Length: 148
Image 1: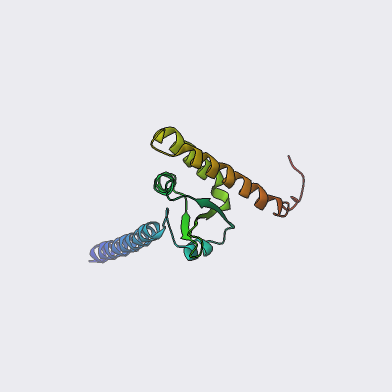
Image 2 (image 1 turned 60 degrees about the vertical axis):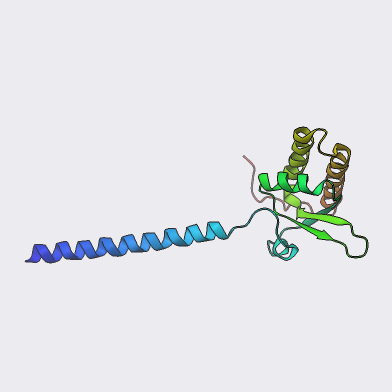
C-alpha cells in the first residue's frame, strides 16, 4: 500500500517535471522563431540598441545586395528618400565586415551580370562611412587589474 503511493507520487512528479521542461522548450523555440534576420523596418533596427550606419544604393544593385545580405544573416533596412528617390541601406555598425564580404561575394559570383563598378563603389563607401563613425566613438574603458 505504501509502495503504491510512493510510486504514484514519483509518477506524478515525473509528469510535472516533463511538462515543465516541455513548456520551457516551447518558449525557447518561439523566441528563436521570433528572432528576425534580414530585411527589417528601420524602427526594428533602432530597437536593437546598436549604432546604425547607412550607404547609398542603386536600383540596379539592390536585388543582388539584398540576396547576399540575407545569406549572411545581416540585419538591414532599405529606405527611399521621397524627394530625391535615392535608396539608403541601413545596417548595424558591427556588421560592416559581413556587408563587405557579402558585396565582394556578389561581385565574384555575379560577374558580368552584376554591375561590379557600382558594387565596388558601394563597398568603398560603406568602409569609409564606418571609419568616419569609428573616429567619433569613445575609446574603450581601461581594464581594471593586471593583464596576465
